[in-house]
Length: 491
Image (cartoon, rainbow, N blue to C red; front, top):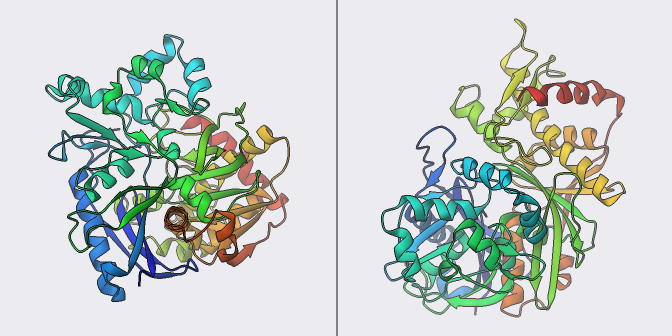
């Protein structure tokens, strides 16, 4: 009997495979990291074949860990790093080059030229996005322009473009499916979120041939079936798909318009579901697609902090201040405050609400008395302050205060960070029992796709709370907020 959903959570630094049952309990979880590639300052790449291998390894290891067989898997859900761009040969399923990662700034000059030419208002009206190197469209054009003969091959229909979800489905189905869902399509700067289709005008503007784009299907649907995948039988349906942040919104069961979540991963991403209403932000946020389930097409407001958990990784790998990421909580808690140190973690530019792609990290307030512990605490505070800026912008767009913020992702396990976040937001922060909500959302969507659940609401009873963090005295963080506001312009 098929008892489990396999959720593949393909992230920026690794791929996680989880086995999840009908009650949405996680029975096994394995993460496999893969190398990051930094060709030059500001550039970030991935090897798409290394990503695929990490997915295969994670699947094999989670099956071995749990003793579950491939025949017990009823369906597969996929969630993924969103804007990362891959172009491959359709027949050979071979990438034409390394993938360009969402963090990569190599097309910043192209984006500047598009803005200078007056295209930003039209792009934002169609896509809900500003013109920025963060998104996929200019990345795809860069690959076509810089890989020999790629543009000619694309025009002949020999190449396929996709974000990582599309790439994984192509590999899982041996090339039979070239698909994506609206949540991922909405991150390309090529998809009209009002008309719900690829935009000919945007494809022409960004010089991306229509024939390389995938078919867009609902977020819960049968996209194809496994074929020739090591360790899995042929015929398992791939049945749910969403970009990682929208998937986390599903996994947090933020179903009422106005409900919100923040995911703390490599970056930090705050999304608020706005239902079928598309709200245009006046405060530097994105308007994006949340999901499409059946005929229900929902939107969200989104703010992104490019560097969150990656700042902790930098303390570990770049500075050697900690041995492992989990060490930061104890080190940061060993001091009462950051001693006046403020860390603006703009290591790859500033996202919403600033959208300054030239910003770089800044540390202010250093003295002879500054210790590793002060810098560790300032790092946690910098992550939380970045998120507080997003929520303030979101509240201005909505014209009302948020009552509760649901949190997830690896860093949500850090109690000190979550308490700092609640204090800065003056909003209750709620952590679920399962913080792997990105994968959980993919599983819920796959469950709908194969008929386990009738709707997202049908799965809502399975959400379970772990801990609440009530905000403290706002006066205690007033000085920290003021120091942050002074430090951000220096980044």
